[in-house]
Image: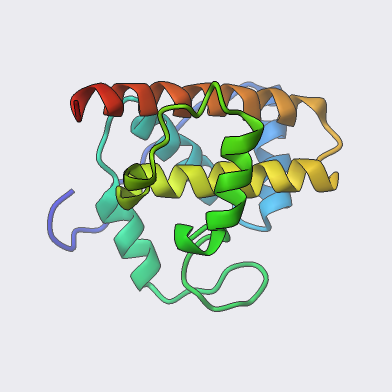
Length: 158
């Protein structure tokens, strides 16, 4: 997307069970299903290597508050610098998976934002915020995907 064009709309077909899961996730996040679906699609695009920095900047600049009413205009895990201790705890908890998470890699938004999101997610799981064990499985898959990204990024910067 270039300039200030209005985002294009896309229609997605889901099975009933997938729609139910989307609705449950949206309810947990206290946001519309379409917003949750867009986040999931962006995450999938990012996993495939798409650059979504413009989306993050535009959302952060919009000035809308998060669900706690902090008014930061960003998600709970942004900015990543607020979660440095949680990122370190995540690195200590999963040293093998996160062995390629170097301190200077956190200067890259595509790395730092995912590390912070994973750290906040892990904290929520540990607090018992999710009763569904599939959340733990989803976290494990996301952690593996992030580890793969770190390994790929590490190879590029050698």
